[in-house]
Amino acid sequence: MTLAIKGANEIPTCHGGLENLDEEYAYWIDEVEGEVPRDLTGTFFRNGPGRQRIGGKPYGHWFDGDGMVCAFTLRGGRVHFRNRYVRTPKYIEETQAQAIRYRGFGTQVPGGFRKNFLHMPANPANTNTVWHGGHLLALNEGGKPWALNPANLETLGEFTYDGGLHAGDVFSAHGKIHPRSGEYINFGAGIAGFGLKGPRPCLNVYRIRADGVLAQRVQVPLTHFPFCHDFALSDRYAVFFLGSIVFGNMLPVILGTRTIADQVRFDPAIPMRILVLDLSDFSVVREFETDPGAVIHFANAWEEADTLVVDGMFADNFRANEALKDVFNPDSRFNGGQYLRFQLNLKDGSLAKQKVCSTESEFPTFNNAFAGRRNEVTWTACSVPNGADSFFNAIQRMTHDGEATLLELPKGLYGSEPLFAPADNATREDDGYLLEVVYDGFRHRSDLQIYRADSMEQVAVLHLKHHVPHQFHGFFTHDVFLSAGD
Ligand SMILES: [Fe+2]
Image 1 (spheres, protein in one colour):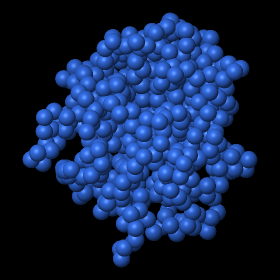
Image 2 (image 1 turned 45 degrees about the vertical axis):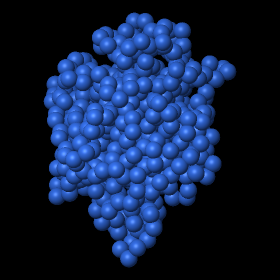
Image 3 (image 1 turned 45 degrees about the horizontal axis):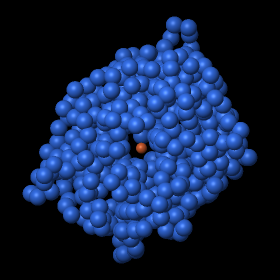
Image 4 (image 1 turned 60 degrees about the vertical axis):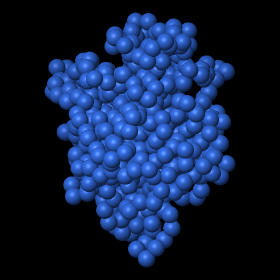
């Protein structure tokens, strides 16, 4: 293993945090600074690629690493850690072979186009998790969910909601739970049929009831296949931003000579289209068009009279794709976006947008009890140019009116998505904690850091016995999950 630590006085980059964690652990974390809050009870699940190399060979894209779910269970002032890979066919076969056996978003099977011809990318189940309707799911937008046992993270199998997801359906990693109905709304890119010009693209939008039953699916026709990773949810609407990151010519992908990642590009000639769907029946109620760009992740959305307000992390390029294809390059830097607020007037169709803050921001999080109605606080991962900014190196608390509190990590330590977890019996929107897994490049280990979400005061640092490769997204539930031997 080659780490980015070169000398005692040199500040490590984030790249050591991309190395594999092949081992699976289950233990109570004993090395603790500060005090774990006793009014935070529940389980914090996270997902991300746990390995970027197989048999010593790197995958061709960060998105192709196999999903490794972590569970931090908080109870009575103590925290239990568990990590386990999702046993997809890709994980199982590649582990046995110690070689790349499946195509990915940016990975080819060695052996030329014959080995890749007509093969679709595998689903690595590596992007997010959700606990809803009695199901813990590992999610990736390139395939179906994978169900896990929440107590021990053992893989139960690919999940279809009793056949509600059909062959070929995909299911986004960014479904959202509506706090009023308890419904889980999700979507996936699909094919509505075949015409003279080939397959007709659509968005499949899914409604899963609070009891975990897929109750409705609707096809929304589109003009082209979208690179649509996330959407925004207000009380009455689902909002999809179809941006300027597009799939180019897919013929070389089908023929096996190029990967999807090779053919995805930012086209500055394509404006961003915004579709607003009525949540009651998923009908399109209004469309907007604005300058080229893309919103990768959304914060909250809410209605103010005729205006729909949407907070999102905006990008005017897709240069990040080059870093994602070459993760071990010490010069690779993983960028965030701009925190923008869009105001969509549903009555007259006008659109306005403004920058909420100037700091490079990504991975927004807020109190999900306020999803769909105006919230006062959003927290983001930030990248601050300080000479040690190859990855996210700060957390920001941002009020609705743009008052920012920025908390920089020590140089050489890299965070990711901070997740808001409400305190037990919380009484205010920001009455709770931020949970942040931080990679310490000096020690090649990771910590769970816990902050008060209101004051940003750090209350505990829990040192793991190993590192956790940088992950994408997580989910907190007040349900406590442990297995009998823990
Ligand atoms: Fe995401």
